[in-house]
Image (cartoon, rainbow, N blue to C red; front, side):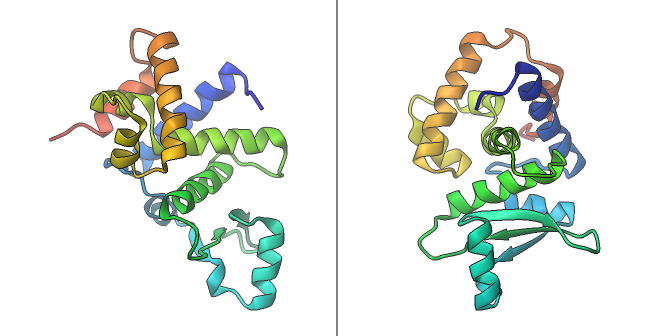
Length: 182
């Protein structure tokens, strides 16, 4: 599902504001670290009883975000040994997106927003631009994302180069400042 340009811009601004708020300054971006800083409990499916794990798998085979009755934010994730760290990290970033964007349901639009949130948080084009990649593998190595995600990031980076503003946006300037090399 394609979101409006305004939605994409809003989400990019929210990612940068989140990085600022929680002093995220190094690559690769860790969803686990960010969740910890935000006070979100991250719970692997393996920590659940068999009955709870079965119920969790019915909700999502990857993971999900919820607020418990006490108002605590929780992210449950599938930690099956066949699932790579890169995929798990993107799942955590996706679920953080649901939390940050205050999603209340599971609409196609909310899923598209959370997907974009995770994609932008994991490998923002202004930070990709610093490494001037020629191949997706370079993005995968630096940002610790899967090859598939790196291909999408490379495609998005090239669109950003071709169609983005020739001047950095306010949120892009703020992002670059966060990740300045001392």
